Image (cartoon, rainbow, N blue to C red; front, side, top):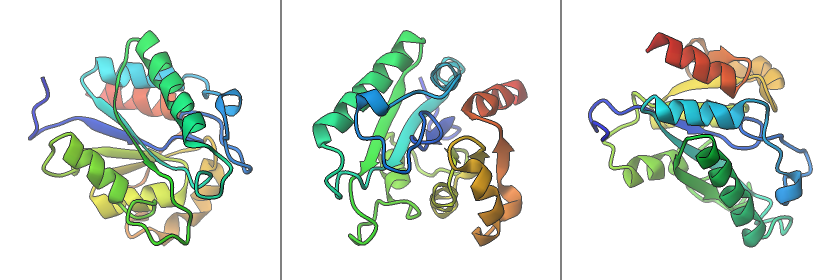
Length: 189
């Protein structure tokens, strides 16, 4: 179904892009609240031939604030909502490590994005998008070779002032929300 040489892939951060973020972590299903239009945006992208994956730092696990079972329930709910809207997630990659654990997967490192690439059988990510609301999402995308998009939901507004830390800040596409990103991307193709 998908041409691996001209693949259409969108990788999303989770908290602040798909669902509301929280400074005290999204710890359970009751706290996992989708942002307006986000689920529908994922479904639209899927129906237009895009594979959609999620790459999410979840250091709340390492900190003992989130149980693996609670995280699994949140992701099962996300997957079910996307399916109900007529879409599908190709993959969900999670970094459960803390900021000082020295792993290769925690954004801003590109480990989760490269795992998604490998799991989907792709040769590179140059045609893929990394959509996030924080500098570390965009840095991971740059490091993995994706195009990068900043949404102004979650931490997006405050991230605008940090774009100078990127190697190529001029390449950051900016969107009001995930729904706006999906609508504009699909209007162009």
